[in-house]
Length: 564
Image (cartoon, rainbow, N blue to C red; front, side, top):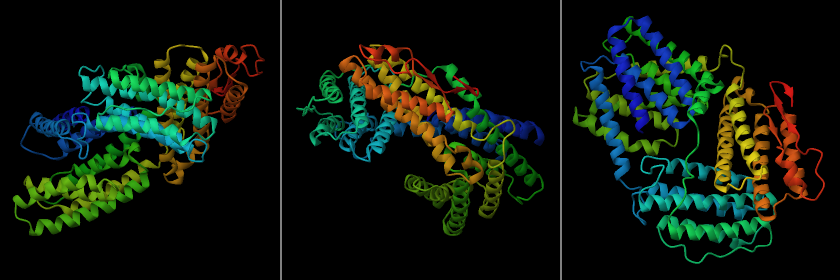
């Protein structure tokens, strides 16, 4: 919340100053440049995307809504609203989460969800749903990582409650590893195997002791690893002291490479072009007096921002939903404005609309309708005349602009560059995990962190592929074949996880692991999208008194079109 709030305040200052002091042409160029920067920053992830969105919306409102207050006063008012939101978020409990106190209720639920997901994966072991359950476990771990990195928990815990949550999250990582190895083996496990993680989930939610945990049988390495992990979890819950394993270890240089790389360029160019064109059209309509008595032209570029952001969902369906929601919301507001007293009725309408946003968030069209009513009520309460028809026209024009810009090829960009960049990042994380496991390192905490990063980048690549496949055919075809590469990388990381558990137990790989690693590396090479190699450690761990496969120590993949 804090980062986007600061970005929105900065956008208001820049937009207000530019709108008052520069010409229309220079203002359009400035907004286009802001769009380029904001789109590139959006490639960093959800927080970066929100930062870029608030920066552009603040700049559009500051430049396109002339008001007597200077930009710094607008920025302070914006920050005051964000501060009120932060205060409510930090102070109020999550409904239904009062059992163990509400200070860390959301974080506690996120960690408990990891143990539930481990239990679900154990239940599904040996069935057709195991892959989906493993993906659900990855999502639960991602959510817990984000929750533990939030504003109410610091990276280095200082209170007993924080240390306890750190310990409970850290204790889930070896459990998740053992459960993934069991799912990879494909053999069903007894039903009581999942009972231990479920009791741990209940203990996290209720801040209660774990009680006795049913031990699984110790017949195979993965079950022995699960039993050991349960024992360590019980000890960690009792001590309430854990390591610092929840943060994503990404350097500033990696962030800069993401912003300046293929994803950042593709996001940035598309957002810049769309935002700049919409701002130019809005100013042209404004100076031509198309607005009549309305001199605020911010709606068109602000609408374009929410439509063009590539990380907010499929473009075509988002545009259609926005158009339908805006028309419905504007017509509803026109009816309310005709009968409600002013300003009391408008203030009540703002409050009711705000309360409906979480419910309406289930569908973009419904959310757009509610937000349209809310914004029009706010603007009218501030003295702006009723403008429903004008807002409908501007929204439809923004939709047309975004549809055109969103489906034209970007100069210097090949189709699907952003998807290839995601896959390359996922392959790099998988390679780092593979090197660590086959290199014989004894650093288990580092191994669990690398495993988390490998699965997380793969989940992000999968999300980008799902988004691309849901677009119109001109964009969707760029993702052809990439889903098979992502699936192969996921199988490779699953296999490396099984190898890690087996190596902990026996000190060597069995022939099944060796064959599977070689097969998956060869499959990645055949795809030709990314490169994955088997390290020199593969010879050491695979040999150990037996024969070493022909693929031992070889490299697989392509690099700049060259077979390695």
